[in-house]
Length: 384
Ligand SMILES: Cc1cc2nc3c(=O)[nH]c(=O)nc-3n(C[C@H](O)[C@H](O)[C@H](O)COP(=O)(O)OP(=O)(O)OC[C@H]3O[C@@H](n4cnc5c(N)ncnc54)[C@H](O)[C@@H]3O)c2cc1C
Image: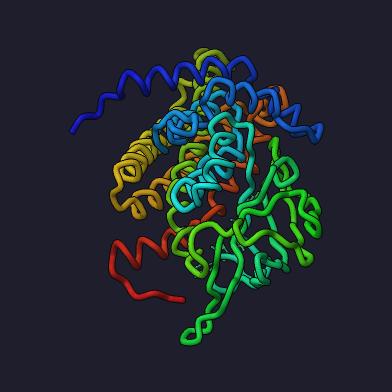
């Protein structure tokens, strides 16, 4: 077993970190607060090939994997620049199209994913289905050479800036179980009948959230990705990259918070020693640092398993769980160490709370991860 990071990975880490540090947390904060997009940062990352590290070389990508894409996102977040669209577009959508897309779909979309010129949103969640994808009611009905789509999705990140949506819709119902059979479709965001409304959320981020309505949206039958009615099994292939990327985001935010905490704790002095000397502050930070490092190890393991075509579900779930919890612990203790300044905008900590807290809930909730581990790792009966 070798825990040395490869030279290639270290160089990627350093290069992304250098690029992101030119933007910094204030850049994201200003974009978020003024309802703007992080276009300059996204384009800069794209120009350097960092958004397409996981896209196959034949399509202009880096020919690497989720391990490298996770490094890119972790380093961005460690510099205070979280980008939710990195999870959705290159990690989920590019992965699924790369795995299940037709030759035509790959030729059309993958070169754009490789450069970051294409952004794709991912739409599975529905108001009445939630964590239970079998209850999805957004329906795609085959009509000759086309599909007609009706229904609604909610909490769809970044659809306003996306070229297309990767949509999970119902195409039939299993006669045995009564459960929805699902399929995956590429839906251009300029399709007639497709509209969206912004959902106001208490998350300070450069991407916004939307309810998306499909009012008899017509798409060519060629926009079906993979096999009809096999959508759920196919989507599962994109969920492990999603979980690994969320873990990487959490790990990066945790490192950002720890760095701020240590710098403040070493310099701030209110008695005769820097506040970092008080164990009441140092020990919770040390504990959070341990949790962060453990989460990073599990994230790297999950990414390695995924990239080496091994079963990665357990590790990806565990990494996502551990990283989300560690991130919250690190951010909370960093705010505590900053005293009143922990709440000041200029210290760039409290505004991250909504995003960090989200990572415990989405894209898969803490409880659903625990369900997975209880059932699959421990062999306990399913409760639902
Ligand atoms: C900011 C943001 C961005 C998002 N971006 C996207 C996106 O781009 N695309 C997309 O498709 N979705 C997106 N989502 C949706 C997100 O993935 C869901 O919110 C998440 O999966 C939880 O589903 P839900 O909100 O319907 O909660 P529900 O499924 O209603 O769950 C509610 C609560 O019940 C618990 N629960 C449910 N079932 C069980 C059970 N069997 N056992 C124990 N507890 C249970 C859950 O853990 C949770 O705590 C986003 C959400 C947010 C808030």
